[in-house]
Image (tube, rainbow, N blue to C red; front, side, top):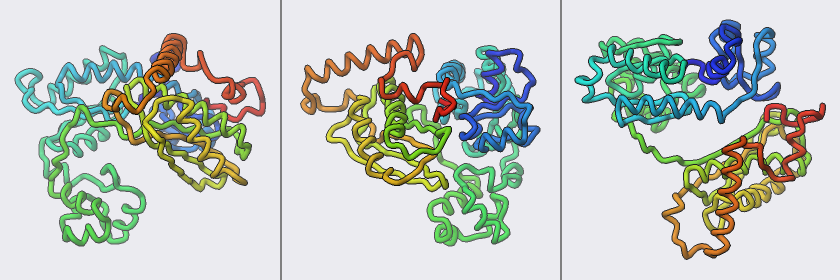
Amino acid sequence: MDAFYASVEALDRPELKDKPVIVGGGSRGVVCAASYQARKSGVRSAMPMFQAKRLCPQGVFLPVRMERYRQISGVVMRTLESFTPLVEPVSVDEAFLDLAGTEKIWGPPPQAGRAIKEAVKKATGLTCSVGMAPLRFLAKIASDRDKPDGLTVVEDLEAFLATVRLKEVSGVGKFSLDRLAQMGLTHLTQMRSLDRDRLHKMLGSLGEHLWDLAQGLDPTPVCPSRPVKSISHELTLQKDTGDPTLLCAHLLGLCQKVCARLRRQSLCGQVVILKLKYSDHRLITRRISLDQPSDQVDEIYRAARRLLLAASSGGCFRLVGVAVTGLILWENIPSSLFDQAREAKKKGLARAEDELCRRFGEKALTRASVLSTLDHRSPKRHNEGE
């Protein structure tokens, strides 16, 4: 999808069309999406919001509305599934499709690509950019070559490979790019001049992966049911704080969000991970295993709070986050692990909470300890982006 969050905002508020729309998390957060008008001023995703405001003071700055973006994303994914059952969402605004064997239905690649774009536009009112290639990683790169509202079809594999820069390849970070650049390597096909074992010694498994891609080898399939490995939420605070009471209040709100997502997917988790970022941007993570898998706020929060109080002594923080991993479907957990009557009561309360939040918004029902962090009237608020 093209500048997805910003495009959804312009869809819901037509007066924003052709305006520099920037979606992100308050003045201390980062840019989550920028319209193409905003990008002309140099604004990019993951850029600090204060920098975006300096580059584009005329921009329209809006908070993230993830619930709305997920709603539109669902429409997009269902539309894609009308072309092939092999659809693998990789984020809220991006997916891989395997169209092998559908030529008699949708025609050759250019025709199929246009049909996908038209269907998404009709279903959502939004534009997308499509990349089509015989290899998964090249389709991803092709989709970025002609944004917005683009269609790029890779017909000459070798010729297209020769144009691919290493910085376009997913998984190649700054450290690897710098190291390769020192050797004069900037394009993927230059990897062919190196021995596969040498690349492995330099970059580990990434080196071997790059060598394979340079040869035009990418066996990664499109997997519609790729399992979820973790569920997380984090918050950049409006003001650095070392106040454990306030940090715990924020943490409780994040645990509520994580647990709601666990229950929506009929999952529970065994491992709780705390994420803290200091004022100087140092990042620490801590983890703890639960006695038994859970999707309950009180149990997840109790573990996360324990980690927080142990890790935050004497610190001042700008970001707090929580994740749950070690995920398992509820139906796969032996019933002998739980007190059945007690568990049924907890599940019933959680279902009621989820239904209220589904009907009236995620803030319709919350725990009292979170309320102080949601007071937007106070000039001393800590979470403007919440």
